Amino acid sequence: ESGNLTFTMIKPGAVSNEYIGPILSKITEAGFRIAAMKMIKLRTAQAEVFYGIHRDRPFFKSLVEFMTSGPIVVAVLEKENAVEAYRALIGNTNPEEAKSGTIRKLFAESVSKNAVHGSDSDENALNEAMFFFSRSEIFTKDGEVMMAANQ
Ligand code: DAT
Ligand code: MG
Image 1 (cartoon, helix red, strand yellow):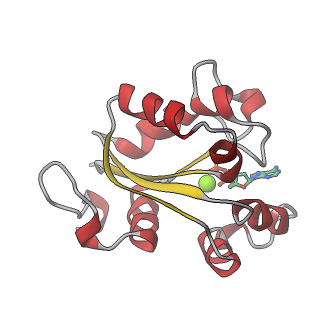
Image 2 (tube, protein in one colour):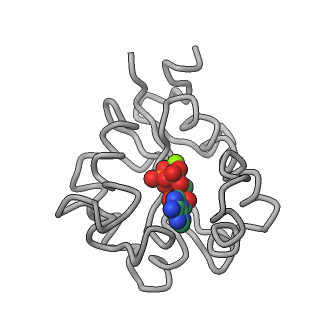
């Protein structure tokens, strides 16, 4: 069974282009609840840990530099089948390949400045949410923070 939570970031380029409001509108219009949200600036060490899986990729250094270049919005989103539904809403990693109407098609500048992050599994969604929020900062509909993947 799939979980009801996913984790997202509105990345620096989208924040500096004043797309926070439009992106949050797309998210809520698509039926996601905002269970947690805040605006922060990532430190280099945090970005390196968050994107640690990409450490050996050629774009890793520029990815960390971009993600620490300005404030971001981090949020936990709630909806049935949240991870898959949100990946569909944001579209392909490369905005040139993203379907029309997706958040990346609408708001991304390039594959490296692609407007938003979305978790790729229930397990990662929970880990990513807990990287930025404590349990008491996540307000789900029924008050439960745990997802199926972690039970
Ligand atoms: P996603 O964010 O769609 O899950 P990913 O996990 O493969 O994509 O990569 C994480 C981020 O790294 C991605 O949002 C932007 C950056 N990135 C990925 N592939 C890239 C590439 N070929 N060139 C530059 N940046 C890239
Ligand atoms: Mg990813």
